[in-house]
Image (tube, rainbow, N blue to C red; front, side):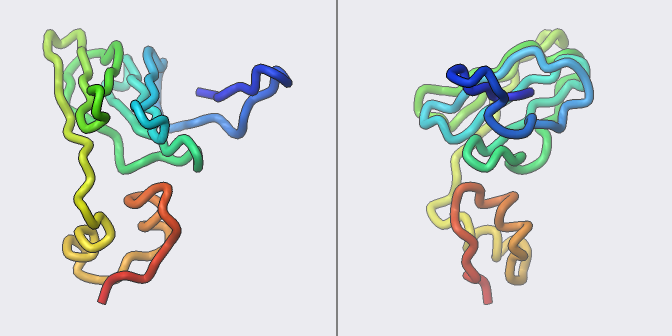
Length: 130
Protein backbone atom coordinates (compact mmCIF):
# COMPACT_ATOMS: atom_id res chain seq x y z
CA UNK A 1 0.00 0.00 0.00
CA UNK A 2 1.43 3.40 -0.96
CA UNK A 3 0.57 6.95 -0.06
CA UNK A 4 0.79 9.32 -3.05
CA UNK A 5 1.65 13.00 -3.36
CA UNK A 6 -0.98 14.15 -5.85
CA UNK A 7 0.92 17.32 -6.76
CA UNK A 8 3.98 15.41 -7.98
CA UNK A 9 2.19 12.14 -8.83
CA UNK A 10 4.87 10.32 -6.85
CA UNK A 11 4.57 8.00 -3.85
CA UNK A 12 4.73 9.87 -0.53
CA UNK A 13 7.34 7.58 0.95
CA UNK A 14 7.88 3.84 0.97
CA UNK A 15 4.96 1.41 0.76
CA UNK A 16 3.29 0.23 3.96
CA UNK A 17 3.88 -3.49 4.12
CA UNK A 18 2.84 -6.46 6.19
CA UNK A 19 -0.21 -8.00 4.57
CA UNK A 20 0.40 -11.33 2.86
CA UNK A 21 -2.47 -11.02 0.41
CA UNK A 22 -4.75 -8.46 -1.16
CA UNK A 23 -5.60 -5.37 0.88
CA UNK A 24 -9.33 -4.81 0.64
CA UNK A 25 -9.83 -1.65 2.66
CA UNK A 26 -7.98 1.12 4.49
CA UNK A 27 -9.15 3.91 6.76
CA UNK A 28 -7.47 6.77 8.64
CA UNK A 29 -8.16 7.18 12.34
CA UNK A 30 -10.19 10.29 13.22
CA UNK A 31 -7.04 12.12 14.38
CA UNK A 32 -5.12 11.07 11.25
CA UNK A 33 -2.28 9.40 13.16
CA UNK A 34 -3.12 5.78 12.31
CA UNK A 35 -4.02 3.94 9.15
CA UNK A 36 -5.83 0.60 9.44
CA UNK A 37 -5.78 -1.92 6.63
CA UNK A 38 -7.93 -5.02 6.11
CA UNK A 39 -6.16 -7.80 4.28
CA UNK A 40 -8.95 -9.95 2.96
CA UNK A 41 -7.08 -13.10 2.07
CA UNK A 42 -4.60 -13.12 4.95
CA UNK A 43 -7.48 -12.74 7.47
CA UNK A 44 -5.72 -9.93 9.34
CA UNK A 45 -6.01 -6.25 10.14
CA UNK A 46 -2.91 -4.11 10.51
CA UNK A 47 -2.25 -0.64 11.88
CA UNK A 48 0.44 1.80 10.76
CA UNK A 49 1.74 5.04 12.24
CA UNK A 50 1.12 7.46 9.37
CA UNK A 51 3.94 9.90 10.22
CA UNK A 52 6.58 7.21 10.60
CA UNK A 53 5.07 4.80 8.06
CA UNK A 54 5.73 1.95 10.46
CA UNK A 55 3.52 -0.83 11.82
CA UNK A 56 1.92 -0.27 15.20
CA UNK A 57 1.91 -3.48 17.22
CA UNK A 58 1.30 -6.84 15.63
CA UNK A 59 -1.43 -7.92 13.29
CA UNK A 60 -4.98 -8.20 14.60
CA UNK A 61 -6.18 -11.75 14.10
CA UNK A 62 -9.26 -13.75 14.96
CA UNK A 63 -11.37 -13.85 11.81
CA UNK A 64 -11.65 -17.25 10.11
CA UNK A 65 -12.41 -15.86 6.65
CA UNK A 66 -11.65 -12.78 4.54
CA UNK A 67 -11.71 -9.35 6.22
CA UNK A 68 -13.38 -6.87 3.88
CA UNK A 69 -13.23 -3.48 5.54
CA UNK A 70 -12.29 -1.52 8.63
CA UNK A 71 -13.94 1.39 10.42
CA UNK A 72 -12.85 3.53 13.35
CA UNK A 73 -15.33 4.75 15.93
CA UNK A 74 -15.75 8.55 15.92
CA UNK A 75 -13.50 8.88 19.00
CA UNK A 76 -10.83 6.59 17.50
CA UNK A 77 -10.89 4.20 20.45
CA UNK A 78 -12.48 1.24 18.65
CA UNK A 79 -11.96 -0.44 15.31
CA UNK A 80 -14.66 -2.60 13.66
CA UNK A 81 -13.78 -5.34 11.17
CA UNK A 82 -16.46 -7.23 9.24
CA UNK A 83 -15.60 -10.57 7.70
CA UNK A 84 -16.91 -13.28 5.42
CA UNK A 85 -16.94 -15.50 8.51
CA UNK A 86 -20.28 -13.80 9.35
CA UNK A 87 -18.82 -11.84 12.27
CA UNK A 88 -17.88 -8.29 13.08
CA UNK A 89 -15.03 -7.95 15.53
CA UNK A 90 -14.50 -4.88 17.70
CA UNK A 91 -10.98 -3.97 18.79
CA UNK A 92 -10.19 -1.56 21.65
CA UNK A 93 -7.49 0.89 20.63
CA UNK A 94 -7.40 3.13 23.67
CA UNK A 95 -3.98 3.80 25.12
CA UNK A 96 -3.25 3.93 28.84
CA UNK A 97 -2.71 7.39 30.31
CA UNK A 98 1.02 6.62 30.51
CA UNK A 99 1.70 3.98 27.85
CA UNK A 100 5.45 3.88 28.47
CA UNK A 101 5.01 3.10 32.15
CA UNK A 102 2.41 0.44 31.33
CA UNK A 103 4.82 -1.20 28.88
CA UNK A 104 7.64 -1.06 31.43
CA UNK A 105 5.39 -2.87 33.90
CA UNK A 106 4.56 -5.54 31.34
CA UNK A 107 8.16 -5.99 30.15
CA UNK A 108 9.64 -5.79 33.64
CA UNK A 109 12.66 -3.93 32.23
CA UNK A 110 13.56 -0.80 30.26
CA UNK A 111 12.33 -0.67 26.69
CA UNK A 112 14.77 -0.67 23.78
CA UNK A 113 14.49 2.14 21.20
CA UNK A 114 13.04 -0.39 18.71
CA UNK A 115 10.41 -1.52 21.22
CA UNK A 116 9.59 2.11 21.98
CA UNK A 117 9.04 2.84 18.26
CA UNK A 118 6.79 -0.20 17.94
CA UNK A 119 4.66 0.25 21.04
CA UNK A 120 4.75 4.03 21.62
CA UNK A 121 4.53 5.31 18.05
CA UNK A 122 4.82 9.00 17.41
CA UNK A 123 6.53 9.72 20.74
CA UNK A 124 10.22 10.58 21.05
CA UNK A 125 12.23 7.78 22.76
CA UNK A 126 12.67 8.23 26.50
CA UNK A 127 14.34 6.06 29.08
CA UNK A 128 11.41 5.85 31.52
CA UNK A 129 11.73 2.40 33.09
CA UNK A 130 13.74 1.38 36.11
